[in-house]
Length: 358
Image 1 (cartoon, rainbow, N blue to C red):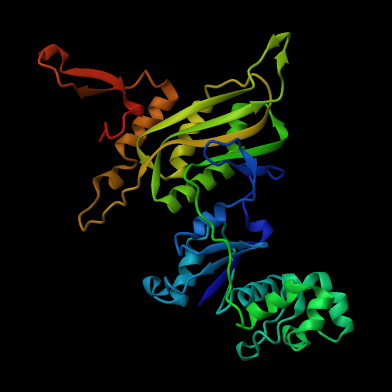
Image 2: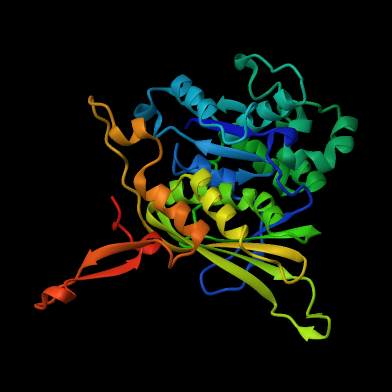
């Protein structure tokens, strides 16, 4: 096997809302608190075997190396596609725990042992299962993986428990590695808890940037494009000036064609939010993909692309104008199967009719 360990420095990960906590929702369930899986969804484009182990993403890439042109080319592609530039730490190895340990040493600024000395020369501080027992192992004269591996098996299990012995067996290739692989959910539904109250609609867009980034990773992992999404926010107050308030507000954005470009969706949300007045401060955001469609990759051509030369495609312009003026202010004509000539066409909102404006 061939593993790549990935980790982003804390200062490199975008945090639109520093104190916010992401949550996710399973189909038919209420949103629940969960770790941020968006980086794992992003990594699924390189291999279907992605696991979140502690603070690191582990990618098992042996089956996909041939498709990418080798480990070096794949590493360069990961650097180029990095969702949180400018820095990404990565460490390849034949065993996932060894790659994880090398990445931790690199992140701490420590020198890496030579390849011939792996995994024996790795320090025990880089092994998660050994961290609770570092003082005991130091008194036994063990500071590296090789020294701990040389201890009698029964005595090590009795003193430190079976987890450390099992991790050493995996590190030295005595037992196979097994991790729960990440899988992108069937439906995208994530929440963001705001630790500071947001009292104006444009600020919601700034706070929703993290949810939009997660949506883009999910769409790419599922090879989908979004046709309709809902941004909802929970209000902090139940009554204002003696008048009852709803528990929250929401708006729906629809696109003419399936979209993955978050900058375009962000502009549509900005146009809609500019026309919204918050009834009370917001304390929580929720982003849902209401409608999706299979993503069609654009084919390349030797001839100049007329749309690229003119700027944004026509359907994106129509969507922005519809979001700014309202869905009923921009109309498109469509044909209707009717024997009466005067009834063979009708007008419909242009911003919410898939494949209508080309």
